[in-house]
Image (cartoon, rainbow, N blue to C red; front, top):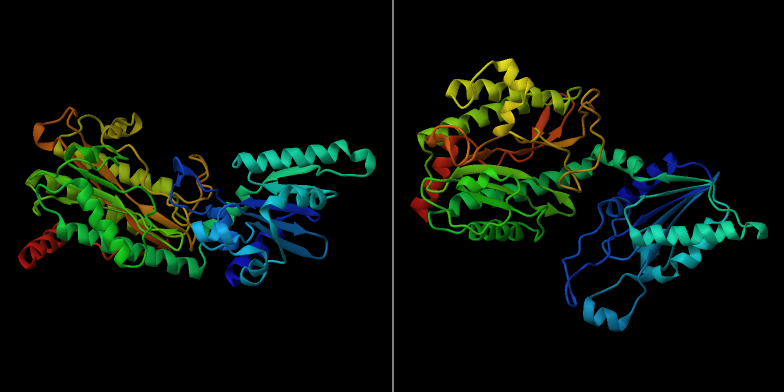
Length: 437
């Protein structure tokens, strides 16, 4: 638990003296009737606690010369544990989670009224948890009403998320290892997809192969809903229906990532359903691959993602002009964003406990620069849908190539390099799988 202790101390150092911070866990969510969705812990709560039960609240208190870490969690309950599983309880929480005190979560408001009295500042994730917002409102108003009896409500209220999310941007060595493991597991799923894909397969069957491989490699969790998009479906950026049959002559785009101990993998590969690229597919694919490799080579400290994206757009427009998918003046096409008919998203995002991880990107006018320890994706794409105003030979081709990177002191380490992405590598892998079953 030393890593979580260090993070809590780091956050406490950012707090004002005589202040309190509150971080809620996720709650279980009903899927239908009395069945819940699979539980996934709140990323911020996990980052500070390492505790994976629902219905809990972490409290940090900073005084002039000391601090306290207090957990509110579910009570031990033999009957509930028989039906729904083990609960840590309060006594074990103190020893296993290295907190100073632990109370039953149903005592939270009672304890908060006492502990918040006289505190100058309160930090909490504003407007993120209806139940926590309601509890804070109730207790603060009680303290205000009781001021003639000596009660003192906080004078200042701060959103804790900007402070905490800034901490999450730069990954520790331990986090980098978890991200690398998530990327390796994700990569193995993509390799299996290439090896098992065949004409007539259904998108959801290919998705099942990926999830099966994730489980074999050590995690049942996915970082997000997988995209398995054959043919024109690949031109829908967040296509998740995955319910169509894969056709001979089409490409299939797979955007899928495993979640390992809370950390996300996020990889996209595009390959031919039958194992062989057509001439026009290969031409567009090679354009995207060349752009992606060039973008990865630009990643280093001091560079902004927005500037990498500018170079991506320039290369893409040049390629589309050469192929005749765009026509006109290069600078005008960039300025009026005509290219967005074929490439409508950015070049990448932060990666971590969330697949689109926490952290400030800055603004277009003043973008944040990359730093060593950041984890990002690089994912250019090219989408030529059936209704595009181009020759028929280009239509129905959607391509995205995405890798996970850890920014280093002098460049970047590609964490997802285990998945083939050149045309020759992909075709060779798929041909070998067919030959050897």
